[in-house]
Amino acid sequence: MTVVSVPSSAACALLRPMFEDVTVLVWDMQDDPPEGFERIEFMVPGHWPSENAHCWFTAMPELRVVQLLSAGVDHWIGHVPSGVTLCSARGVHGRATAELALAGLLAVLRDIPTYATQQRMGVWERHSGQGLDTKRILVIGAGDIGGRFASACELFGAETTLVARRPREGVRDITELATLVPDHEVVMLAVPMTASTVGLINAEFLAAMPDGSVLVNVARGPIVDTDALVAELFTRRLRAFLDVMDPEPLPANHPLWSAPNLLLTPHVGGFTGRHDPTGWHARAEDLVTAQLRRYLNGRELMNVVAIESGY
Ligand SMILES: NC(=O)c1ccc[n+]([C@@H]2O[C@H](COP(=O)([O-])OP(=O)(O)OC[C@H]3O[C@@H](n4cnc5c(N)ncnc54)[C@H](OP(=O)(O)O)[C@@H]3O)[C@@H](O)[C@H]2O)c1
Image (cartoon, rainbow, N blue to C red):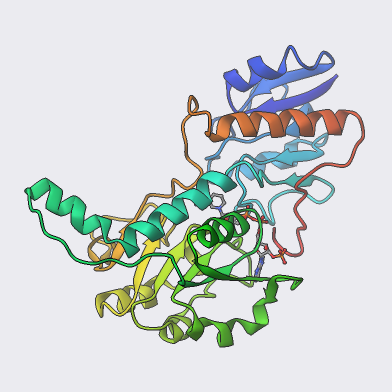
């Protein structure tokens, strides 16, 4: 019997009838482990495991696969024992997250936050906004989210430049970044948080962005130097949409709460509801069942994280 753990009783009820030779335990890694956890071979932790949840790994000699429900794997790198395959949920949250990045960018360009304030005050006052047509957009990260975001922007006439770690046709090399930044009016971040991306958007990078340009971050907060961004926002030289920030949750009185030219959402990129057909649950369920089937049949797993590159 292969022992599998999933984070909710709903997921357990879904898997049980599908897999006869599998024992399914419920454990989200927030609470203490259930009886028999030492025999878990294939585990799906919850979204918010406790701070030191990975300490349990030392008592799990049978563990072979950790299948995450998030596309970001930064919390797990360095904690999953060697010999255990770490898999991301790449693809599960990409559409919703690219969509939110587009919504945030359009809201900033069309100044929707000002109109929302005016609406509450009963004020009918018009000023011109900006559109995507002919906007030059630099998309850093040419994977699931970056690719979808770029395609959507192009539909509205934007000119996109994609940048990634491994250059290829239609994708520029990250080493060209410094020369590309001044030519773009929007910079969108869709890279994983790794040793080479933390602090990538620093004061020097922000200073190279043209006046009035927009930074969109739906990737991870620490990729941007928060203090440097706050300084730029308070001069009103740059604008930004942030779904992720550093720190999270944003503490009361943090300068980002009152920064001008900023629209922020509390890390909800992939967070669409269970009963929403576009929601992430159905895709997560499909991914977990497909991966478990592959594992039981000795087939290659999808979304395997390359520990050395951090994603
Ligand atoms: N806001 C949210 O709720 C939310 C939801 C989902 C994901 N995310 C975040 O978004 C990130 C991206 O997700 P995804 O699904 O699009 O990932 P993905 O499909 O794996 O794409 C990642 C892209 O980043 C590029 N990259 C990696 N390291 C780089 C570096 N040092 N310099 C330049 N490019 C680099 C990769 O380059 P190559 O193509 O050369 O490999 C790839 O194009 C996730 O890691 C996660 O942290 C946030």
